[in-house]
Every structure is written in structure tokens, then in C-alpha cells.
Image 1 (cartoon, rainbow, N blue to C red):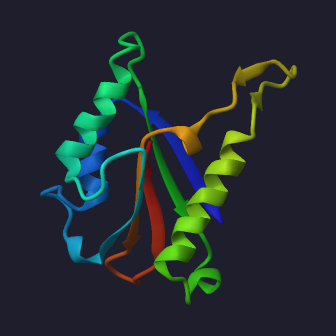
Image 2 (image 1 turned 180 degrees about the vertical axis):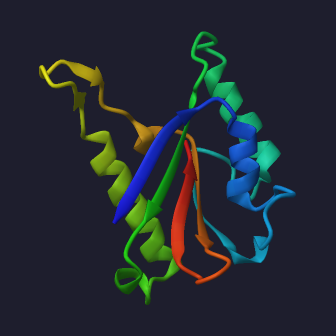
Amino acid sequence: MIAKAKAIAHGIRAMLYVSGESRNKKHPEKITRICDNFMPQGMDASGMWTEMKFSAMNRPSIKNNVIRVEISPATEHTKDFTIDDWKQLWKDFAAAFDSQDTCDRDGKIVSAKTNISGSKSTVWLHKESEGGIPHLHAIV
């Protein structure tokens, strides 16, 4: 499995893309909502973004206050996955991600443990347009 996480400042654009509401998304029908954490259910991208912005209002000095996560497990491991299986994969990933400190070569912590499991988030399953390879996108 390959996963990538990055702190970003362009959260609304990422939210629109992940949810399939972006005008640039060619096949929104290949996108499925997996879960939302600490947010009212069923909101559109703008509603989710507004909900997340309320949480960030207490820390106006933080510019990149959204973490974009992409998780790409091997296709053979997920071929029979249900929505609940994808949700469990996200929960397992978030717990593992939260348990890590990132250190430099000298052992000094450069990035402390996160709390994405306890943060507002939305997770979506995408299937690639060409090969249909499934992967998760999350906005935290």
C-alpha cells in the first residue's frame, strides 16, 4: 500500500475534487463517499469546507491547516472490498498515522504525532478513469 499525506492551503479546491464536485473531474460517477468524521452527514463540498473552517478559526496563523491524504492499496488486496471494508482501512490508516513522530537524522522530532482520527474529515473512494483502480482520498 502506498499513502501520501500533505498539509495544504487550498482546502476548498481539494474538497471539490475529492467529492467529485469539481468542474475538472471527468467521471464523478466513479466516486463514492466512504465516511465523514465529526461532521453532519450528507453535506456537499461547500458545507463540509465551511464546517472545517469553523474549526480552524481558533488558529488563524496556521496557513496550511488541511491535510490531504491519498491511500492506494494493491488492487488484489481490495478486489472484494465493501464500503465498510474501505471505512475500516481508513480507520486503520488514521490510527497508524497518528502514532508516528517524524524525526530528522539526529533524532530530533520535526513533526509531532497528529490526531487525524479525532479531527473533522471526509473520505471518498475514487476509481481511476482508465483502469478502474480504487484508491481513497481524504480531507482532514
